[in-house]
Length: 104
Image 1 (tube, one colour):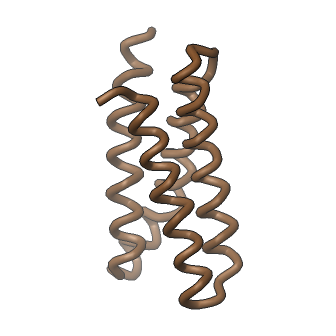
Image 2 (cartoon, one colour):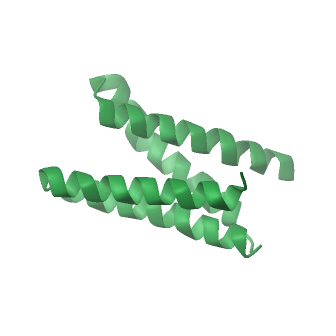
């Protein structure tokens, strides 16, 4: 699967998850974080698809931001939502980090 499709999928997943978090609990931070990270993934996917610069870096940044916010919460609380978000971020870190490493 190509990197742009992965970035679009992760963007839809995170934006949809943030929206669902807002609908279920009324959490403004959920929708703000979900849409922000989803936008970063989506913009990275678009730039990868159109072969513009910094697409890979944007997708990697989205994974770093997502991991930075969800991994500590998952370790502290053990709740399912932060744990799933942590797994999504680790998948993104491995996928986009490995692709970035190959460009060096």
